[in-house]
Length: 112
Length: 114
Image 1 (cartoon, each protein chain N blue to C red):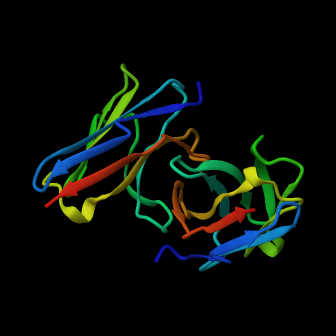
Image 2 (cartoon, helix red, strand yellow):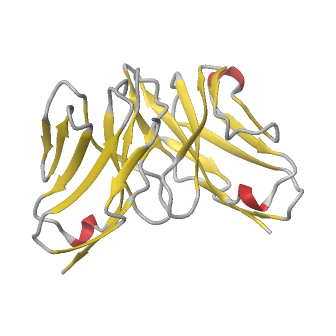
C-alpha cells in the first residue's frame, strides 16, 4: 500500500515530441505528488508537484495530470529537448512530512 | 545550487570498516532528511530531523546506522561494520520553510563497500 509504481522503465523520444511517464499509487492518504529529475552524478531535483484537489498543473513545458479516482498521475513533457534526457522519478507523501515514497524511475532519452 | 553540501562525495571502504557522511545545509533549515539510493532505483527514506530531534527512522536503518544533527545545523550519518549491501548513494535533503513537502537534495555521497 506504500508503493508507487512507475512506467515505463525507459523511454526514447524524438526532439520536439511529447514524453509521457505514468505513476500509480494505492494509499489514498497520500496528499502530495512531486516529480523529480535526476542527472547522472547529481541528486534529484524537484521539477513540479501537485496536490489531489486539482486535476492538472502546468509549468512551462511540464504538465502533471492527476486522476484521483483512478489513483494515477502522469508527467507530460511537451516539445522534448535533448537537455531533458535524464531519469525522472514520481513520488508521493502524506501530511507534508517530507517522507517521500519514490517510484522506480524512468530513464528518458531525447534524440536530436 | 540546492543549498545542501555533502561530504565526501565518494567513499570506498572495505567490509567491516566504519564510515561517516556529513551534510551541511546552506542555513539552519528546520527539517533535514537522509535517503538512500541504489543503482537503478528511486531514493528510499531513511530518517529525518526537525531541528536537532530525530523524529522518524525507517526500518531500513538497522542498528549499524546512526544519524545525528547536533545543534540543529549539520548532520552526520555513520555506518558501522559496513557490508557490501550498504553500497549506495546516500542523499541528504533539506525541507523548505512553510512547504515541508518540497525537498532539495544534495549531490549525495556514494559509498562502495569492497
